[in-house]
Amino acid sequence: MTSLWQRARRSRSATREIGTIDDYAAALAQSLGYGGFSALGITQSQSGQAAEKAPTDLPGYAQLFATNPVIWACMVARMAVFSAPRFTWQRLNNGVPSEMFGTTELRLLERPWAGGTTQDLLSRVIQDADLAGNSYWTEHDGDAVRMRPDWVQIVLERRRHPHGGDLGWRRYGYLYQEPGADPVFLWPEEVAHFAPVPDPLATYRGMSWLTPVIRETQNDNLMAAHKRRYFENAATPNLVVRLAREVTPEAFAKFKAKMEAGHRGVENAYKTLYLGGGADVTVVGSDFKQMDFSAVQGAGETRIASAAGVPPIIVGLSEGLKAATYSNYGQARRRFADGTIHPLWQNAAGSFAPLVTPPGSGSGAVRLWYDARHVPFLREDARDAAEIQGIESRTIRALVDAGYTPESVQQAVRASDWSLLVHTGLFSVQLQKPGSTDAPALPAPTEGGS
Image 1 (cartoon, rainbow, N blue to C red):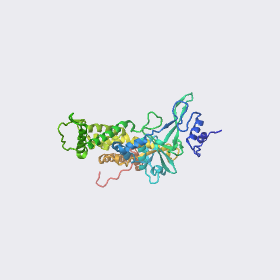
Image 2: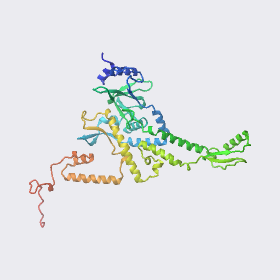
Image 3: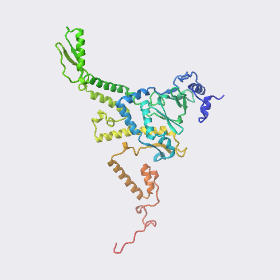
Image 4: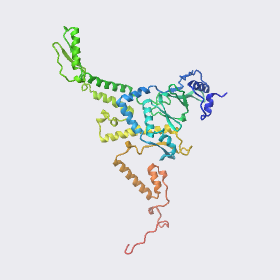
């Protein structure tokens, strides 16, 4: 008798009959021939793990985003630039990227939900990836649906080698379950999985860039608390007050209360301290200048920005502003764009490709890509733009003079693809043989001319 899971695998378009995790575990056990499955753990008798459960630290990372100004600045900078382009189709001519164009098939990414835009979509994508290392999306009733990363499990299946033995894991699908709701199983081609930084301990799961700098964020929060305590305690270093041995405990307690009432707190800072006979004051600890507080805090901020792939000068951190010049900012901007943003865009385009159908279905000559030509952050300055336009105009003139059609020349220069050039069949005089009948007739000399 055909098992439930075999029927689901045989017809992926059919209505799914898996309503609970128990159904899912039982069906998967029958399909793969494993035993020992539990309802929630998806454990097995063989060694290994049958499901990669997403990290459960998303709420904690979200709290860091809301409370740590350095992390907030880095994530907002990444989000502002990452969400700026638009999706487009790019034609591949003999494997070479060529012209870009748009079709109605991109509506899901241009209007992902009612009132939503591509910028809204990409903002949520990069935010999930920054906090959880993964961003999961699927299509339902014409809308792009976000699946919270910590509610998604990647279902794996053992790879069986023909000669015996196991050969790693294959991504079988995704299991999404909201608290208190029924689970939903999705096939890999139904999910856009964006995981720009792979987790070294997982096969398909991504890792947040915040993971290696958690200690730095904790230190940064402690330094912020240190500054607050410093000002709350009269904006002065710690003091030790010694009194004579003859002072009774009652007199000491009264002296302490009176001193704190008159000299503790920001409102009492910098007041002159008057002490009675027998009292001695000694300063302990060090102030911000003595401990070089700004350098210590700036180093931690730089490490956080480095993990985010954002140059400190871009987000206005102290270490970056020390070397802030127009040329340095331009170099930092190009480093941020070329080393961080463009790889993220390329990954996002490949990740969302399963959710849209390219024009001319079945053709491998078109791919989902991104158009960043109108992103303000990536615009070159006026001088560079003028130089590029000057080079392009001279190239167009030379190609037209060589006999290529103006339309094909414009397409080839715009796409940087010389295979788009179409020749008219006409050649210049310099390329024709002497005495050729195809040579254009020279104009007759005018009277008095030579």
